Image (cartoon, rainbow over all chains, first blue to last red; front, side, top):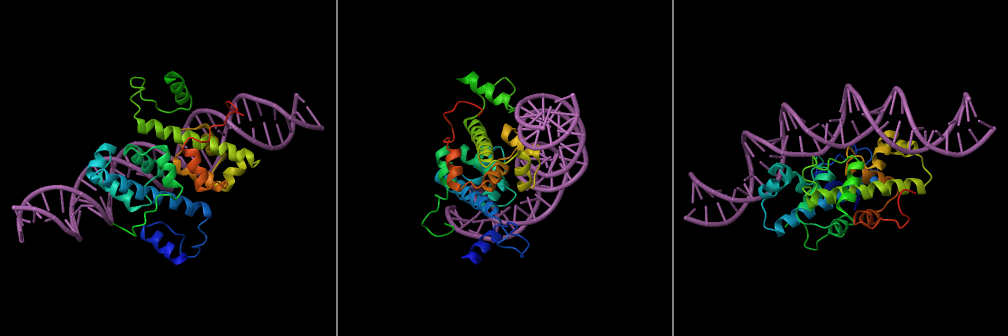
Length: 113
Length: 113
DNA sequence: TGATACTATGTCATATATGACATAGTATTC
DNA sequence: GAATACTATGTCATATATGACATAGTATCA
């Protein structure tokens, strides 16, 4: 379980401590990362569900395709503010966000669609 | 209602459009601000409930008293990431955050305790 | 009164996030 | 296999957030 999670995080490019303390990720730190990853997924889901391309979403956000891609990739360079803004723009309500954040968003379809 | 809200936002220092379009605040923008203000309040509440001073919280956060003050003041220079990190550090669970975010945190005691 | 503890607000150098751009990969359609 | 549409990844100049510091305000207490 631990190693699986670590792989997931490292794959996404998060600075998972410098090897040394994988478990040194404080509860708070890893919880924050989990939340951001959940929001990432939520952005992709909503965008797809609305039949928008990354380019189209980027236009609405006044951002760029690459930033949208990074958002959806769970790139560490993406702030929570941007993720949340995007979701709101995609029509998510506070309740929707709350759901996503509280680890509700997990689909049962396995990994990347 | 509109003016009350505007006053609240401006008081907190948010760039509420340049006078011109107060209603030009998109739904998304104002929703984001509301969420951040809710998180702000939540930080203060939790900190107080735990009997910590801003200085003590700042130490735990590896931050500074002034930043904690700005967080609690709802200063626009504070990111959602920092607010959420702080709450997690204060022991909030994802569920707690979800609650705060979804506009649940409103106490019935009137304003500032 | 001074002394102590806490909080608010402003400033600033630096760190980090951002949009923009280039470019590569992956289907899909003709 | 060219052409088109979409997504991924890297780089970079600039914008924004951050911690640190100074300083002022507000109790509370002796």
